[in-house]
Amino acid sequence: MTIKVYNTLTKRKEDFKPIKEGEAGIYVCGVTPYNHPHVGNARPFVTWDVIRRFLEHEGYNVTHVQNFTDVDDKIINTANQEGVQWYDISNRYIDSYYEVMDKLHVRRAHIYPRVSEHIPDIVATVQKLIDNGHAYVVDGDVYYKVQSFKYYGELSGRNLEDMQAGARVDVDDRKAHPMDFALWKAAKPGEPSWDSPWGKGRPGWHIECSTMSMKYLGETFDFHGGGSDLIFPHHENEIAQSEGCTGKHPFVHYWLHNGFITVNEEKMSKSLGNFFTVIDILKKFSPETLRFFIVETHYRSPLDFSDTRLKEAEKSLARLRNAREVLMELSKKISGGPLQNSLQLRAEVIKLRDDFMNAMRDDFNTALAISYMFELAKKVNTYKNELKDDKPDGKLLDIMSKVFSEMCSIIGILENEKQMVNNNEKKESDDGREQALVQMIIDMRQEARKNKNFALADKLRDDLAKIGVVLQDTPDGVKWSKE
RNA sequence: GGCGACAUAGCCAAGUGGUAAGGCAGAGGUCUGCAAAACCUUUAUCCCCAGUUCAACCCUGGGUGUCGCCUCCA
Image 1 (cartoon, rainbow, N blue to C red):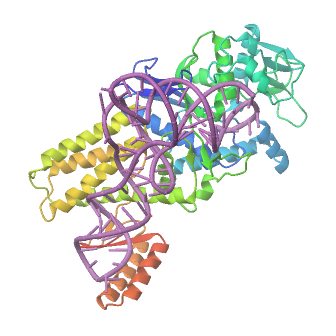
Image 2 (image 1 turned 90 degrees about the vertical axis):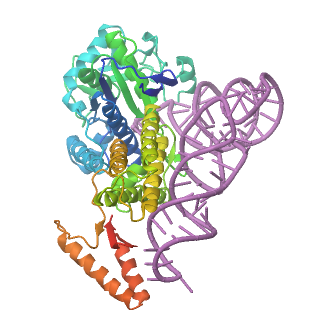
C-alpha cells in the first residue's frame, strides 16, 4: 500500500516513492536553543515522531536528521545579557530540548548536527556557490544572488517582483537584489567567529541546513519538514543554496509543513509573547496528555491551545486508557471457546486495524486514525459487558490486544504505563510504600462505606483524587490508578 | 499591498459528487450508596449567493469572515 503525502512543493497529495527502495531520509528543522521549548515548538517534533514511527511500521528504514542552530543572533544576545559564552546558552537549552522531548516520548533522531561543528563544511558550501556564480562577496559578507536561481520562489509560490513589492526590510544597497540573503556574515566585535576565505565571520541562518542535510542524507533526499513559518524564506533559500550547489533539481522530493499551535486563534510565538513552555504545561498535565492533544488534530491544521482543550484531551485519553485496562483484565480470565458472535467481532477488529492504517497512509491522518481507536475501545467495552460471566474468546482477545497495542505504538501513547492495581492482587513494586499507604486509605474508606458514613468515604476518595489517585468501585472490588 | 490557507453540531474535529467518523459537554440508561468512577444509548445537513450535475458539504464563480507568510519564529 502506498503512502500519500501532501507536498508543499506541488501543493497536492502525492504517492510517496522513496529514492532508495525501503529507505526514507528525513530532515527536520530543529530549534535555535536560546530558550526552553514551548508548546508550539513541540508540534513538529511530535508530528515527525509519529510519521517516523509509521514509516518504520510500514517497513522503511528511516534516517532521521535534525539540526540545532547553535550559532545565532538570539543565542549571542542571550549570552551577552547573562555574561556567559554563547555555547553555555546553546548547551543549556539543547539539554532542555532533550529533556522535554524525551518526556513527550519523541524518539531521538539518528543525527543531531550542530552548526558550530560544521563550519568547514559550511565554508565549503559557500565557496561552491561563489564558484558556481550564485553568490558574491561584499566587505567580508557573502550573499546569495537570488536572480541567478531560476526556481527561486517555487516552494513558497511567489515571484521576485511580488516579494520586492511587499518587502518590509530596509534595502541594503550593497546587495545586487533586495531579496539576496546572507550566506556568511563578517565578524562583529563580541561575536563568535571562524576563519574563512572572506575573513573572520559566521554562517548565515539558511546555509547550515543545506550543508548539514546534504552531508548526512545526500544531495537529494526524501522528506524535509518543519513549521509552515519556515516555508519562506528559510526553506526557499535552502532549495536555492542546495540546488545552486549541486545543480540537481529537486533537492528534496517531499516538503511537509505542520500548522501552528495558536492561542486565542493567534500563532503562539516567542515574539508575540503568548507562549507556554512545555515544562510549565507539564506541571498541570501529563506529557502523554500533551502529546495526545497534538496528535488528535491533523498536522497541517491550526491547533488552538487552551486549558479547556487539554482537559478534553485528558478525558479522551482516559477513555482509551480504560479500554486497555479492560483488555488486560479480560486477558487474565481463562479463555473459553469462541462465542456465537466473536468470529464476526474478530473480523470487525481487523477491519478497524485496516481503517487505522489507511488513515495513516493518507497523509498521516492521525485524527481519523485515532477515531478508530475509540471505536475499538467501544467494541472492547461492549464485549466485556455482553460477556458477563462467560469466558472470553482467547483468539479474539489476542487480536484486540495486539491491534490496540499496535495503534498505540504508532501514535506513541499508552505504551508502557502502569496498569490499574486490583485490590485483591498482591502488589510488589519499588513504590510499595506508597501503594501500602493508598491501600490503607482505601481500607478506611471501605470501612466507612460499610458503616454508611458516605461523607467520610467521599472525602477520602476526593482527597486521593487530589494527589492523582483515582478510585473505581467495581463488582470485583476497589481499583485504583495513578496518573 | 502581494501570496496562501481555512470556514462542518454547544465546543473540538475527520470526511466523501449520492443525503455527515470520532472526542468533550448535554440528555437518557446500566451499575451503585437516589455517590463517584466506568460502561451503553442519544444529539448536525456542513458561512452566504449564483452556477455545473440526475445528485454537492465536497466541483466552478462571486461575497463575507478568520488565520498565516512576505522580519526572527516550529
